[in-house]
Image (cartoon, rainbow, N blue to C red):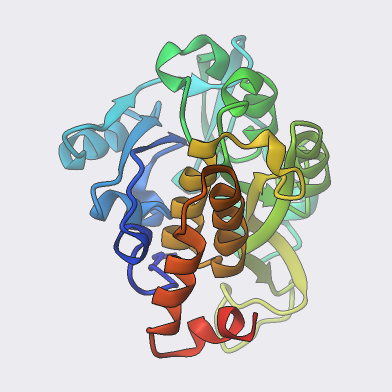
Length: 296
């Protein structure tokens, strides 16, 4: 999926306020195209610390990185040795063993999930990487290993305000944690589910829709889930985190209502006028994106 700034002009241009942002990307392989935080990079507001153990993918990332970006060859996990299951489709490669009982229910997946090589790998805990401390956003997509990585990155998560993580609703891999497991863990860490961005369904075999094995129908299979620091407990945000979350949520996800909520708290603490400036700027924009703030 290629993200876009759903809200039109960026947060900095609407508010006259810019906050430097740090993003962690675990599983930064550019196989899926433009990352969700691309608007932040394009505006010059953010730098990335990316982790990608695949040498070819790491080389592509190094070739196109920005001046302040860093990419490291670490496999993020629990710090133990694991087996990397290299699959016929690179996007299916995982520390977990593919689950034929589920894959066989969908077109294409039995071949895509066919293991072609098993490689011993050493993993690193996110909490053991000093460069990861103080980041604002976590994007993670490591094919079923997301929960393991986050369980061993709880110190890093204490600084994070927005998480985008892949989640599954069916176990594509054996013993894979599912969306409910990830949600419960992150809720215990002070995060709430904000939205899916997007959800992906597939037609259950043997049916085929529109002559395409990629068509969806009724069965949700996976999604990218956006979690945010619990906005019902604004006391858990620092002043800077209120601005950081606002910039990320506006530029990456177009969450105008939540941004206005956070800016209101920032104004209450500081005596500033960012919420009013933001709402006034939105009112000056044409299009449906301003409908909800105008109604408020």
